[in-house]
Structure formats: structure tokens, C-alpha cells
Image (cartoon, rainbow, N blue to C red):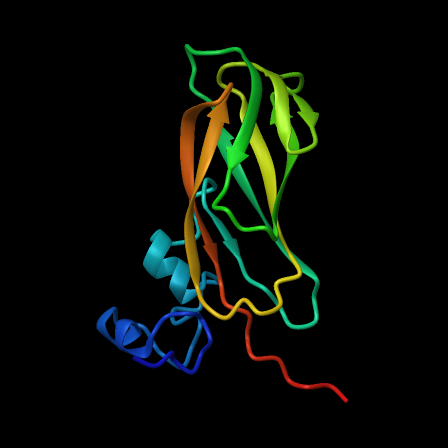
Length: 163
């Protein structure tokens, strides 16, 4: 099975079966890549991350948001568990409402129940990423799973040689 001409990571036969255009990476033009439409059922779920490497850029990033359960917590430490990919990094960005948790590098500390947490996932130096990669994101509160999402890393597009 060959990849479609659009470099979205889906094989042409799969795109054909799904009614997608193998020559367009975003068949319906809504800004959501065909692979994300197929594997994640769209780009609207803030718990999912799509990383799309670009030519001549050293990193690509995506934000995810999780609302922690009400009626549980508070928690001492909340973090994300990602697939074992050495080029992936996580950064804690914001806890809402204000004061719902303290950022500490890749995690939040002293997190209240019902808090909304915003993380950034960064793919560093995506050179050589030739295939579509799918994985699971787990939200851990004091080491226990309390939420989940999906991670989709798009293949690096064919980059023209600049002389």
C-alpha cells in the first residue's frame, strides 16, 4: 500500500475507503488534517494533541487541556504520561481557576479538584520522522490515572533541498 500524494501519513487505499482525497492533506478544508479526522474523529477534543513537524523548524508543539474530577483530590502532583519517545517534552502552562495549582516544570503541584490544567507537548528535532505515530496520553494525579487523551505525530513532509 502506497502513501497518498498529500503526505498526511494515511495510505492512499485507506483514504479512498474513508472517502478522503489522497492528493489533499485536508480534504474538507476545515484546518484539521485528514489523519486527525480519521484517527481522532476531528481536532475539537482539547484532550488530544496533533504534532505536525514542518520543514526547517527544530520543534513543533501542541496544547492539551484536562479538567480534573470534582469530588476527588486535592492532589499533590499532576503530570502527563506520554508514549516513550525521547524527543517529546511536556511543560505545565496554566491551572484554572487562578490558584488551582502551581506550575513546576512538567507538572502541577497542590492541585484542586475540578481544576482545568493546560499542558504543552513539544516534539524536538523532528528530523527523520517518516511515519505516522499514534499513542495515548495519560493524566496522572499522585501516580493514579484520572484522564486520558490521544497523541498523533504526523510524518515529516518531504522538504525541498535549499542550496
